[in-house]
Amino acid sequence: MGRRALRRNDPSLDLSGNLRTFDQLPCPCSAESLFGRMAPLEVEVGTGKGLFLRTAAAERPDTDFLGVEVAEKYARFAAAALAKRQIKNAVVVVGDAPRLFAELLPDESLAAVHVYFPDPWWKKRHKKRRVMRPSFAADLQRTLRAGGALHFWTDVEEYFRASLALLAEHTTLLGPFDVPEAPAEHDLAYRTHFERRTRLHGEPVYRAEYRKPG
Image 1 (cartoon, rainbow, N blue to C red):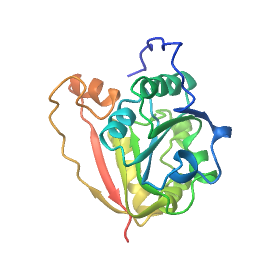
Image 2 (spheres, one colour):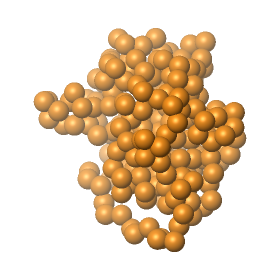
Image 3 (cartoon, rainbow, N blue to C red):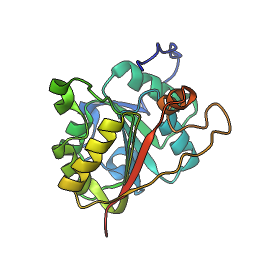
């Protein structure tokens, strides 16, 4: 399923507290350098419209969240939703997630990484562009702290099976652990907009969780 057109952001919103370019990020990038406090830091790869980011940040104010979105218009949309709700513990960066992990995130700095419905890059010659690749798996292993979690969801079974095999080969993360599907109590009771669309169309979602031993 392709992405739908976005509503226009309120031009009066100040996004400076919730939006960064890649070059504006501190190096190393940590909760302390980005948010000015010592707190658990979680990264979402592919923020999209930002439903997970704003929900999780609002529910867990003692945790900081960094969303990474390669499409600027979606990053700005997600940041605007955070700014509108005055959510201070979440920032969206416009940029490439594998580059962020490789260049800016320190060892054992993340409490969790969330990868929900990444682009499957269907064509065989394009599969090397998938975010779940050996170099990214190595950076997951390196940046997660002991006990830290990887949450990986997709609606593409082939991508799911290939990613589980890749993680088994290139990391020592414990898992995959099954993640039961939670019933949706209302229209926004989903982790992401893409999950909502997928489930409302009656299509399966493949979910796995991993933990770094410690």
